Image (cartoon, rainbow, N blue to C red; front, side, top):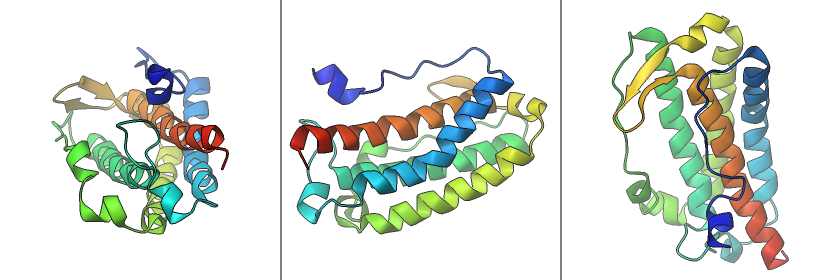
Length: 175
């Protein structure tokens, strides 16, 4: 059961290659993510937002702020890969970011709005790119060389993954 609570849609599997049809699906997932996140938290009270989605996990509030933090970093990495030759990117301490005051207690609307804006910018860029542009890469200290196709797959999964954490909690709790 714990594994299902941690990975309700399964663990991410990095695709070796991405074709046009898969990329189209990832773009659709990216487009839907901010709306689905908003819908998932729309009727939650402050107490419910401060409930962990699983034992030992982040609260719903922290998950919302994490999505904005993570996708902001990913968007910057995407742009670096488009403008530099296989840049080395930095990681960030996501667990420590989730403990900062704005992530632990901040109004989720800040991050919902930020995610709306990030995805609007990111998708505008994505839709203007040639298929070849998605072969551009960056170097991640832990993951190695990552193409923009692979990053798109990862962040399409990432949004669905965390929305499933929240919707799973809502369903289990009968909210």
